[in-house]
Image 1 (cartoon, rainbow, N blue to C red):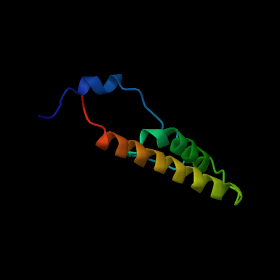
Image 2: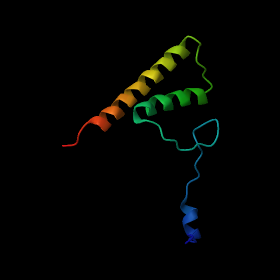
Image 3: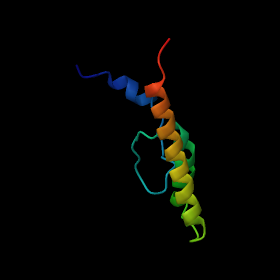
Image 4: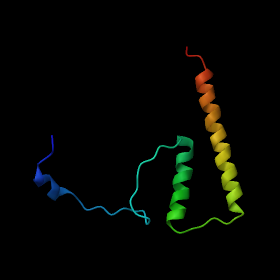
Length: 82
């Protein structure tokens, strides 16, 4: 059933997004990567670029974190419940 209470619309505060590149959407990422990915997205949104010397280190760290996530998932699957 549709909400037809039009009086409640008057109480809404206009909201302007904080991202410069427009609308956003929700995505699912591993928790251990979330803060780092958000920091990376903020840098890109602010027009910052990564020096070529920084890129290999960034890709290396993403690979390390992915390996950690995979190891934790394997451990959870193989650990017997008590």
